Amino acid sequence: MKFNPYQVEGGFEITKGDIGFLEIKLPSHDFPIRLVITAFANEHRLKEYLGEDEQIGLNEVLSKKWSSLADLYCDDRGANILVSHLYMNKKGGPVLEEPDGEKPLRIGFADTVYTECIPPQIQYTALGHLHRYQEVGGHHAPVIYSSSPLCYSFSEAGQDKKVVIVTLEPNKEADYKAVNIQSGKKLIRKKFHSVTDAIDWLTVNQDCLVELTLVSETSLTQGEKKRIEDSHPGIIYIIPEVNSSATYQNEPISRRSKSINENFSDYFRYRNNDQSPSEELLALFNEVLGTQTEKEN
Image 1 (cartoon, rainbow, N blue to C red):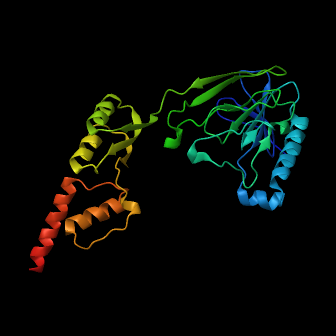
Image 2: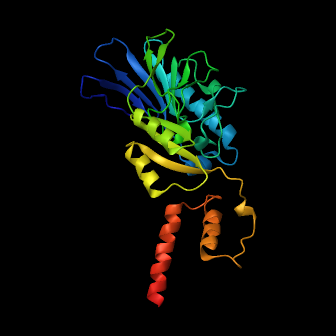
Image 3: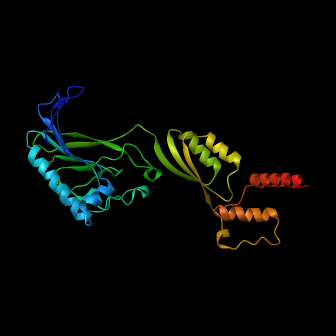
């Protein structure tokens, strides 16, 4: 592949390039950084390229490609890094678990790329795809998922997000340090059994995004909901949780010999996970019902 070196802003020079490879010369260092790069693989292209046995095919293809690039460009006079967006693990190692919203994690139909595919010249492997900080192992040099910079769903609530600072020199072991990210709002899941307790906590803990679960016997009134929403600017979800011994969902609903209010309450519980309508909602229902009756008369 023919490549013409060029400079970018700040004095950085791209000295070599190939498909899946860049060599960068920094103005403040007398050695280059070599990056062996593999982006996230498109599912349809993977299946078309690798055929039916994607698992074996993907490992063989990447191992061959990475080794050929490392043999050609990654000698001991530069800092050699593999950067990739995929699901990688040590062969025989434990499954790298993620929050509920992130499984199963796959590239196309291939589950895992093994760390044994990483060429020996590589001094550090920087991985993206999994959202949690993880040290994979299985190679003589560090293989690290640094984590996503922010939580992407409440299934990641409580996770510490990190960046990894890596110090590299040619022909030496990498020195790295994981640093917690302090910026950005934390995602927090909280559960309360009273509106007052919820508001007390929300008032004190303003600098976060909240998934709030309220355990109650009846649905929240509009007034209670407004008090909760007014107490905190970062409420993403308010989830009612029924704490009732009633089993309306499992019982047939009989409308015979019941008042319209009783039928309405039965239907409301059926549609809302056994949660009874509030007095405010029943009053509104009767107001609408009364207006409708007046119109018919």
